[in-house]
Image (tube, rainbow, N blue to C red):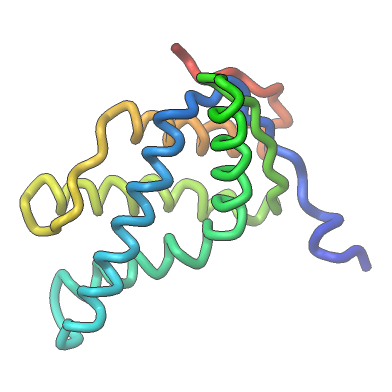
Length: 152
């Protein structure tokens, strides 16, 4: 029986706008920190617990790949690039999690726009980068579609 790593398939992310991608990473980091603080002070009821659950989901499901991609993006930016091609190896079983990631980000962003969180809302382009990444993951893993660059 093949190991989990042998079942992973590459997903190519072409023409990723580095600045927006880095902002997306920072946005998630800020949200996770805020959700951890909410979880520490929550009484086990209400919106704070729901948001803390969302943050825990984000932290555990994307942390490993996210850190590697972030490092690659920062290295490309240090070389003077504005866009970068990235590759991540994912299990096809992670597709539902990819779609859920958009729901999590949009829900957190909505809470932020309502003034319920200290973290500033994400810009629309930052959320567009996340949506595009998920579309690429779905398209490449589900239908073996060739990669499409981020639309400028």
